Image (cartoon, rainbow, N blue to C red; front, side, top):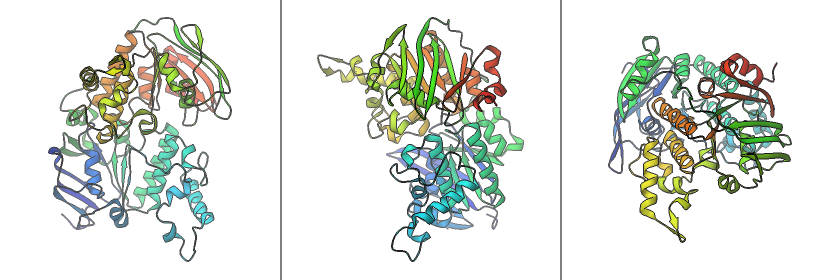
Length: 503
């Protein structure tokens, strides 16, 4: 290796878990100021590789060089101290602590020497400076508790925390998976600022447009093996997809040919003070209704209230033409209104339970009689649904927490489909999902629409929203600012104008 050519280099990395090979000869290199994309399908080994670099997992073979020196970190703290930080796809904030306390967690004493207690005023000041610098003050304050932030805001705090370490290498694992276009623009400005300071960035993403917009080079893993590294100026999206999946994929979005039936679900005058107000919408059998809006617009919050997770100040739910009362998620499930949440950890999965248990947890009636569960039937059906979603697993008894983020999402969707929904709410359905699996999920959505299921899809990915929706409802500031169909629903400019309040 040439001196100082790379700030970080990993070569010949191998890793197995319980006899299953996850990485075999993987490699990655990053130069100062370079954004190096790391791509591959879910389960390809991307997260395992960067966790080995960070010292979270020990490697079985291979070497890691930092500034030309061979390093072997035994913990993430060692990597942080050496100048490498990582923003994980699965966020783990401490909910009862403030934004400032989370950003400077473990560094309070180091930052405020000579004082017997943490100087919260100074910590808040430094956090506010970061918020101002990266244009986050509009929706995040240092003294806010993490538990009141949504997924996107929590992601931005994690990014800010990583930046605060002044690291020479920052690893970003699907950093825009929960961000709107506005927050993504802020992140991109942060990234360009870091690159101007010669910070190297390893960028894990399934979003092809982002990779071609940002990256200098891209390395591809497939089934744990290093397939190749190419310059983005010398590659096409089709070539990268072929490297990732080893096969050609159809481009574009499929058309929903399902016959649209009667209105299945109607929300009337939904209001939760300070969150959303006077929201009205309808969705028909066989229809895919897209919901658009910037982060904080209230889309997910409306659906949470519909499901009974949050209370309403006023509003009415009409199902098949009749009013229904939903005070608890179990009420919604009883009425076959099912939600696949964007927050896998809090609402989607029980991470320390098996894939089988997660799929069957709200479907026990399908496997039981006289108060007993038929375990053979349960295992067989859950396995079929998991395989239908192309979940990469050793077996149906694997813990959900052992899966990659994308495969966890597939388990959430398998559980939802097994519940035989009349209305299926899909909140960011392809968040963290690779390009091959996205096509499968879209196909499954259309199959469900053909069965007469009404689908509400919340998505921050504009191409997905436009490509998959029959109609689009746009929200801004907790209110519906527009309802689009036909050619209007395919106009990014019109949707964005409404998402900005119609300005």
